[in-house]
Length: 378
Ligand code: G3P
Ligand code: CA
Image 1: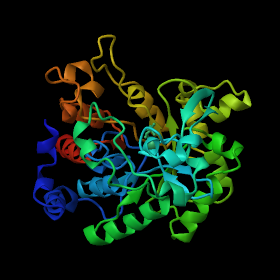
Image 2: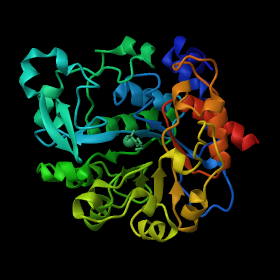
Image 3: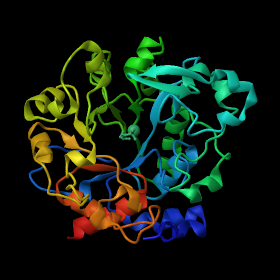
Image 4: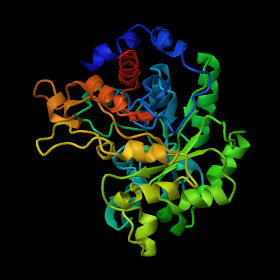
């Protein structure tokens, strides 16, 4: 599939595109519901989570990307959350902002380019926590993957870096305009790093959810993290929303590493640890290779036991990240030879849906809406 055909409705007007997705949404419940302990796959109930918005079609973590995700049928918009020097939660994939903004073209910020240690890695660049919100507002977003997503470079320089509050405002506005509840799925990025910098994300996130009337178990909010301690801490200080523990493809949560705890993500994916996770979380967000790995030749293998194990512990499973371009697909689902061309992404996602997942992070939400319909029909 070509991305132009995937979002062909947008060539007419944003309004037309919203209408074009309406039939798939009409049967959806007003408030997306997460349910665990499913005995068999239920594709129709699977959540479509707009990963960094609709980042296959717009520069990631911009209001335009989030809004497009909702227009294309996503149930949730996914902002990654970092923080400014003056303590404002903003949406970027990581603290270093050189890869997704035009900061390098701002001579007034040239001396902010510094080298830091981030979770054990040495990284050089510009850092969100070294800028005030007013300073960040002078920057503009650019496409992270211009070689693969050349079409998205059309929008370079057009969009600002959103605050999390702006995303919550957008969520409210879009829910009203579209007549269905659209959720927000914020990820606390590098919690230990920000705590050590004196800019803890957690109390600010909780205060913001409270201010917006969203600190409820039935709120359209799911909080996620690759670290474990900060999610437990959020529970202790009063977070009531749903929570998802992310599980990387390899390695270990940095909070455990820095505390000398030897447990890895693979350890956390075992039944005893899943039961422990279930004390503070409602689900897991594993790298998709933990659900269906790839063979040595890169083709899709058979599912692992993770979905059943997680469901047995009462946890939903929301794997990441589904992307339509050949370069991200299993080798047996690619079409043609160009890395940027779309392959058989629908087939990949249907296979995962049939494995019993409860939601999926996707860069192209419209494709996932189709996959969900196909899997439900099958
Ligand atoms: O949060 C789910 C997924 O986004 C995790 O990967 O690195 O894209 O934040 P990342
Ligand atoms: Ca994320």
